[in-house]
Length: 278
Image (cartoon, rainbow, N blue to C red):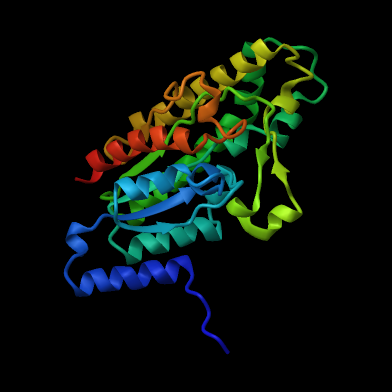
């Protein structure tokens, strides 16, 4: 039988062993990443983490996948969370990078929150999402932090990020052969994730945009900031809100920046990562 291609883990493991053998491990950042499509989605040429790995070269064990939710990735007792703990106990990581929470508060989750609701103000709509979803998202982050603290012996910092304010509400992601291969012949687009789900309760586009701004502000203020305060030196996040501004060319679709957009965001994230590990 022909040799099977190496998995991401096997490639990382072999590179780690080689760096250890050649005594270059001490000068090579070793990073574990887990997350959603901002770290994984094959749009255009780049995602956020692709940019970061170019700007901060090192050994990256990349576990992220498109569509992943924090509540699934970091569910207490889950195989995925156990696996993260096993990796931390086996390898000497310098940092854990996380992109999580966005998929937990869009799409079908919004559909469930707003089912049967009348027309709402953006503030009221955000309040409903917070009440329904923020608790489980924060708990998921806390589950991860507990594992990293334990298995990393309190020495492996976690770096997460906010998202940025979208400007192309209702625009789905266009998939092509270049980005995802032959599956694009069957699925030409995915999304949207916000616009069509809020239109019934927020029919005005200005209200939809305000809703998203308030929701992302609340994600930062009610989830990320308290986690940073409660876990000094262990958990931090890169503040990306407002980085791209209103320019639609910096966005590929409703949720994902374009190559140029990810380049801008990636530079900020990479700068904070360098400060964290050097």
